Length: 265
Image (cartoon, rainbow, N blue to C red):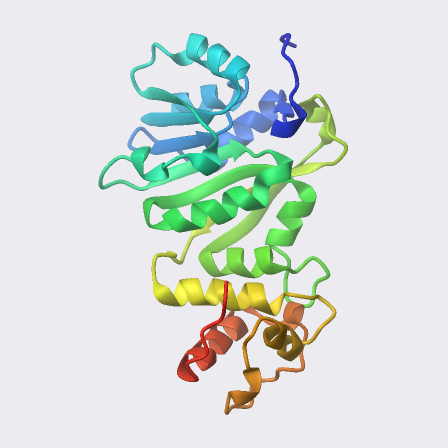
C-alpha cells in the first residue's frame, strides 16, 4: 500500500478489493455517452473503472496528497477532469455537461455521508442515478421501511426522491486502513426532482416531524411551531414519525398547505 498520511477529518478508508470495485462500476451500467462525477477518488482505484466505462469522468478530491496521485495517473486523459475541492463547497452545476444528466459515484466519508446526500438533493434535476459505498448502518437507514427502528429523516426523504436499493455488503477487510464497521453499496435512482416548492415543504415537514423520536407526530409538529390540530381531516396525529410512509408524509404536507401552515426549516 502506498505511503500516505491518513487524515482522520476526511474519514479516509481506501477500498482495495478489485472484485468489489468492478461490481460497483458494473452496477452503474456505464457507456461512452455517460458523464460521471466521482466524489472523493482517493488513490484512484474506482476512478480507473469509471474512466474505462464512461465517456466523461470528473473527480472531486479535497486531499492534496491524493490529488497529486490522481493527477499523475489520469491527468493526461482528455475525458478526465480533476477538481481540488470539498464536494460540499463545490458548485455542482459547473461540473455537469449542458443538456445532460450526470451519474454520481463514490466511496463516501462515513462522517459526512448524510450531508453529501442532502447537498445533492438540490441538484437532482441534473442527476440520473447515484451509487455510493457507505457505512452499512447508513445504507440500512436509507432503506428502512415503515415501523423499523432505523427509520429516520434520511429514510423518508431519500425514499421520496429516490428508489433506493442496497446492492451488496462490503466487509471492513476490503479497506485500508480497515474501519471499525462494515459497509454496503447503495444504488439511488432519481424518481422525484427537488426543485419545486412542494418538495421543499415536504422535506421541512419531515424534519419537523422527527424532532423527538419518542414523541407523537402532533407533539413534534407543535414543538416546531406548527399547529396540527387545525387540520380538518381524519389524519392520525397520534402516531410516531417512524410509523408514517412517504405517502402519509405527502398527505400531511398537502393538508398543512391547505391550512396555510408552512413548516419551518
